[in-house]
Image (cartoon, rainbow over all chains, first blue to last red; front, top):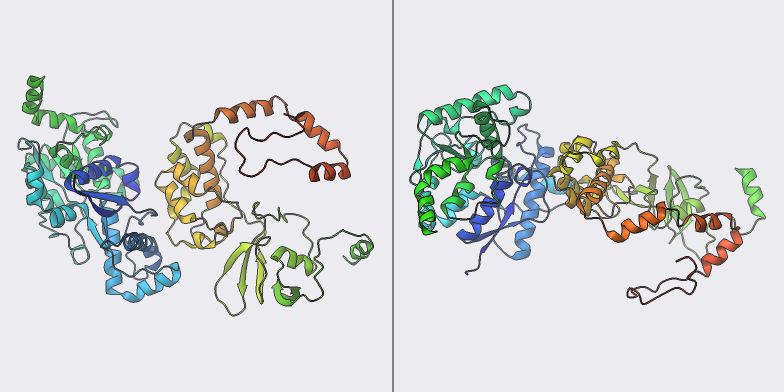
Length: 310
Length: 264
């Protein structure tokens, strides 16, 4: 087996609790795709939302701690300074912090003095999707797909934080993004392009005003449904949670009942399915809407093939 | 004060004031804003006693393990705040000392909750929701006189890894200096303590040896020994303490047995 590329990884809090399936599926897929995500030894919460005030030094302390740990991690191992993330919130916060330091180096100087650290500003913050696109390549990814996904009609859902603000994130076009489309095409799914793909799901308003969030999420799901999608993929734990809850509510599900409806996949969960990996530990059972029902209808032939072999 | 001193004078071996050798070098330190000349090489506790202070309560173990003597200090002309344990830190010239008095921690009642049905991580979040106010400034880590990465163990608890937090906070001696400095008003030491208790009761498998010993203690196995010690006079206590047998360091299990086996 060829040696796996060492990629430093920052999980963030959600990935260790509610979105464990996202992390596990991403790690499993990474091994198949030829790289290994190494969690940096010391990390704290990124702050979850980027501080938007002008005087935001205190809010930048947390992401700076993470970046400096990543920088140390890389320099100890003499590898390129980069940091891969999965959660859109973490990605957004870290990437914008990095941008802020490039834009206003004096802020980094102040923070270094305050934190008694010496961050050089060398870490490149990457999203897992970005790594797939720019390092692995979607063409190569397509070659590694093991299962026929052509029966599955999936709508990509980007949300906000993966793409915006464009000037600072620069992952893809903020209004007409294609990265998840290309990803799904590489898997061989039928991609459902729908206008709600960059709408807001309601985000952390779920804590204050859950009705509003369920309504916003419902609109997105409704639209995807009207455009013929069987499932949604997303890269954000909070979008996943909000959409999944909303869809569950619509179908009268209590938590974790596994009712039929439109499941919300993390893109890595679908990737694991396409690569033919064992998805037992990927926590499909933690979704309100059981993704296995949709998958089983799409892989009916597959199932029959397996049956006949037995 | 002066009366006490007069009494003390003709009793030998009473009082903790260090008697410096004749050629000792003296340095000046500041205690509560007052300058004192004290012999160098003393620890902060001994220097304060040399300066005339008497510790009657909360002076601690003097062994660097109880956390009672957490001290903040500055050095003249240096803007940094330093921390240390007064019983372990040696005085240096122009030190300005401030020992922390009782500083109120937020102490949630977690004993009843140890039996709670909540998952361990949610238990911590319920008891000490203020940990989510952490802004990641790392002041606690820089303050800790034990060199614990305090912010990291709070981060463990925030992400729901109670066992990780319990392990990372294990060396905490509850001096509370981090609590004094935290801008988010977190009581780190109590969070760590709750985490270690929850980990010990719910996450770490309990050891059969410990359970057996706990039962023996509860059944009163050591009561007689303790009451014997309690009734002993001071001289006798000193004598048996000095002549006590100790297991040699690094001896293998079963290799060493005490001569007096009457209490085993």
